[in-house]
Length: 273
Image 1 (cartoon, one colour):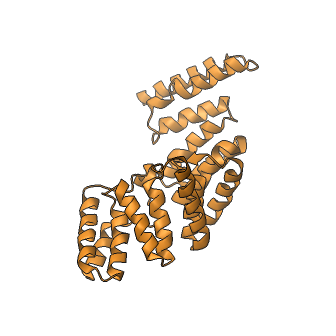
Image 2 (tube, rainbow, N blue to C red):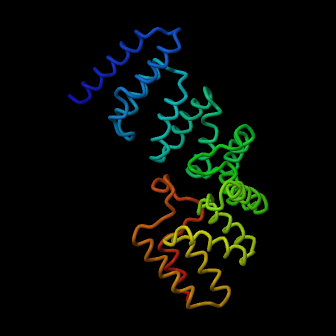
């Protein structure tokens, strides 16, 4: 109760202080926004009641602040409350679609698994901002994954290839190993195992402890009747999972990424050998 009272007093102080700023001076308005977003906010955990209360108070002052709406949506997505998360995120896009359309496309793709709707958002922002990234990857990358999950393999191949090749134009080492992984998975599903194996080798060259690529590479080795090599690779993948190695994407602690494997998947395949 005492902690909640202190928070309420802090929020009252926030309201009084910020409302005292001149509304028609852009410099003072920027100062007001910094005050809102920095003065008290980040002393709270985003999972806390205080985080939401603070944002609600700030939104009384800045109801059209897209960033505050996005920050209000974020913990809801991470806790699986997708309805509320999307409700708040839609408000962010209402006030700044350029800043948050790609973010919403990412959320639909990775968190909500709504790939058709994700494509609508991702393609729209890609047309407007073709060189920008979201969550460390290009828009063609997320578009390609969405098509991959919809089993539209030619489109997935095109966009994931576009993501890789655009990066290669900058630097031969600029391609993220997760890009190679999903492009390899697309080739795998197209039954182009030779090319898939080449792309998986590119992944391993960058990340030798990535269990997912070891698993899928092992399945190709089995198709090639290389049973012992496949078994050794599966055991290595199992050890890597046990050691905590994963895809290393920021949000995989909250949700599974497409085609991520588990220790159970590895065990089931090992039992068939």
